[in-house]
Length: 258
Image (cartoon, rainbow, N blue to C red; front, side, top):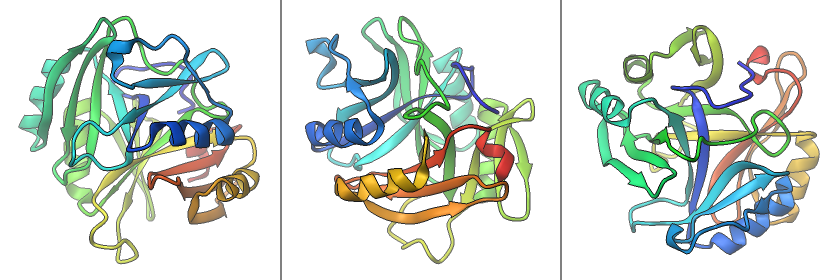
């Protein structure tokens, strides 16, 4: 699925929570060409939208609780936050924060699946979500890393109605069979202290060049650039504050090569 606009029950936004938002804004601004939205409101509590051109692409925020990790969090668009929250509980997940209004922007809730992988629900008000997808510097794919694939494949279709397309090495999530994300089983190569989590992948024009620039800016390489079937290049990085994220060379649908 080459997502081009916000779609109900699909990824709609991504947020980075960090102890050093100014440093994170500088890093991603250099790496992806993001610029800060100069229309932020004082009541937003340090929440900063980052733009690709004039389109909102992501947000960088302070950590709002001591237990909140420095990490990217995926937001999924929903038509009714309360109804989706109820399905999360029925499917064995938990609500970390019950549905709450955010000024006039919309309504959100923070949830975790059966294995405690955290994500956000977003019921749009004045703010719909990202204004750009699958273009350089924007979100294009999301991946669940989990040690409980059976639980995940039961949970997410029950909550969001996703389709599940398994293969020998990878499972893909979609809507009506059109894929927007995947699931990777965490094996012994993942330290036990690394929890299940959602990982965003951002589109870039050149994966190898982006990795080199990220390293020069202080990032670590968790997975070097890798060519998938069909020639697609992907990589996974960790920013200087410790948040992991993926990149992939933009163009065709990332799911086509997995």
